[in-house]
Amino acid sequence: MILHNAPGGGLGPYLQNPHITQADIARLKHNLGFDKPIYVQYVIWLGHVIVGDFGYSTSNSEPVFSAIVERLPATLELMISSFVIAFLIGVSAGLFAAIRPYSIWDYFITTFAFFGQSMPVFWFALMMQLAFAVHGIPLPGGYQIQLPSAGISSGDTFDFGDRATHLVLPAIVLALLQVALYSRFMRSSMLEVIKTDYMRTAWAKGLNFQTVLFKHGLKNALIPLVTVTALTLPGLFGGAIVTETIFAWPGEGRLFFNALGQQDIALMMGYLVFNAFLVVFFNLFADVAYAWLDPRVKYD
Amino acid sequence: MALSAPINQVFADEEAVVYSRNTVWSRFRKHKLAMAGALVLLLMVVVAVFAPKLAPYDPNAIDNVHWQGNPLPPCFQDATQCGAHTLGSDENGRDLLSRLMFGARISLTVGVAAVVMELIIGTLLGAVAGYYGGWVDYVMMRITDVFLSIPLLPLLLTLTAIVAASSSKASLGFGVIVVIIGALSWPGVARLVRASYLSLREREYTEAARALGNGDVRIMLRHLLPNAIAPIIVQATLDVANVIVLESTLSFLGFGIQPPTASWGNMLANAESNLEVAWWAAVFPGLCILVTVLAINYIGDGLRDALDPNMR
Image (cartoon, rainbow over all chains, first blue to last red; front, side):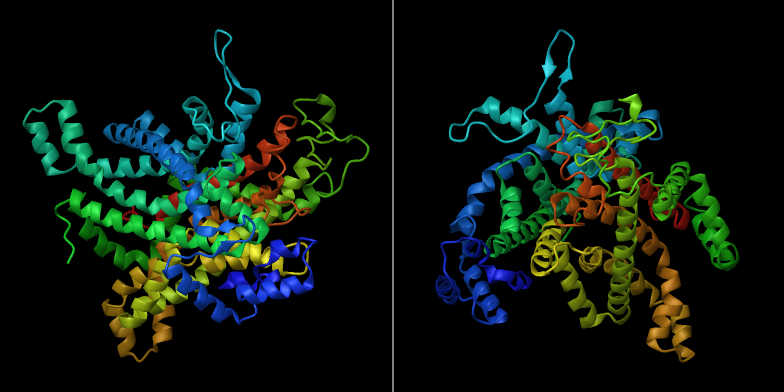
């Protein structure tokens, strides 16, 4: 609703075009319904959204829905790969810290988690670019790690190697915050599980280290992590905007950022609704998964 | 340990009034990293307050004598800079150190001001929801659900973009940033306050206060708030860190504090394109953010341990 108060009444991109006359503007305003009061516009927009019509993007000259769907694979690619990295590192770090609490490794991992949580995403992205893309990390034997700083070079053909090298930096950047969160939650969750009676029973039965830790411990300690994963999702969208903008990744985040600069209201609204929908969906998904993983949880 | 807890509780209740401040401070002092964080933050605050006296240059002044189009390197890369621009200059020939000092003012002020606003809104709404319960509580919690389900950064970006575009001035005052961040980040506090009020309103002393004829507002503020304050303080501290990161992200993306006013975020906005020639312009502002935020997070951690050992 607030979005419609912007100057140009949502016609910003058209107002910048010198070939459009005042009469055209008036006609467009009328056709697009911008001459109606704001609350009427909002109700009309809401009605359209319910039937799946998100309106027309003024800056991209395409329907908002197709613009969002078109960028979805790139964003999913980035988010899923960052999630996999974060999950593997975070869970193993948390597990490691919990097995030897208050050891030097535990302090190292906890400190790292604090750093990860305090690190501004955009600065970490810049530093990664500085280290890996601008200067390159020299390796023994004359090799160098040199990663591309931005974009995907092959637009039409799918080149796996090229995709992967371009994905490394943004995925690591997006993974950092998640690694920090997962390792902290994994640590405390595992510490709690280790104290339980069934773990003591498992040790008493004389089971070996791996079986006790992984089959009895890890399985139970992972359950609370489902909720944490769902809770980090809103933050992940914010992180994706920054990461995609800095690394010129052609996903939802950059689409939204461009829409901001162009005052493309329909696209901004579409993006926000889309995100809110995803967050609600994943929260529901997490609740269901939680009940499925932990039979003690019952919903009325 | 578990067995002695109830006994401790009994003693804690009796002695709380007399010793509380001392115990909190002595517990906080034991948390070494929190103490280190407090020192770092104190240093930052001193620098921010006395920035006009401490800064070697005007933060917006361009050094026309030395600057010739390229950012000037810092002292440890070019010894001739040691007396002049210790940390070098940015791409416009402005002294980096002076800009960092003035940037500290912006970051810390926005952080504290937005959190104060968030606290006022969050505490009031949370207190009302928790104290009255029923449909008031239900409606308010659904509103916080809505706020929490929308990712914060996109919403902030949208609002600041709109406000920036609709104001006639070219620059966006930091008051606007503070109000927008404060107005959107209160649900966390509101939930926290509601949760403690829900249990506190059932306590005997609340009953007693009511029996003595105190009004609802007085009970909420005078009797319940002091008992609910510990988690609020911890949350507020951690939120200052979050707000500083948020503000710098907004400024970095060009929707926060507008140049030429120096803020740690907008100093990094042009750093990306100059990454190859001037690494220092990209490293130092971010380092300031990281160190400050880390310090505040450790203080928050220490406060959590000090105020309520059972919270961890």
